[in-house]
Image (cartoon, rainbow, N blue to C red):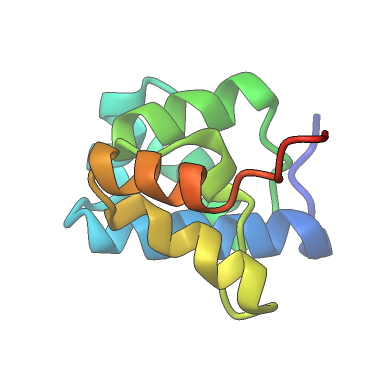
Amino acid sequence: MPRRTTPDPLAERIGARIRELRQEAGLTLEKLAYESEVGSKGFMSDVEKGLARPTVETLAAIAERLEVKLLDLVTFPADDERAALVDRTRFLTRGAIRRLLRETAPAAKK
């Protein structure tokens, strides 16, 4: 498949999110490409720029190396409060997540 010359809007957003999470993890583009085994530094660069549309398998490999959930690659915290809340759960302990799930569980039907 030839390289895109203009970014795909959704791929560009996902790429920007990957870049944000990669930088947060302190990884270089090259290190992420190598350690996630998704391809070359050039391919990773195209993914981050939205010039490549990564497969779900590629996204899963990137998420695994970044030690985040696949969901985190397609969550855009600046979009709305719900997305921001989902993003913040990345930093919660398992116990805190369990408490949050209990507190937000729908009331049992009588």
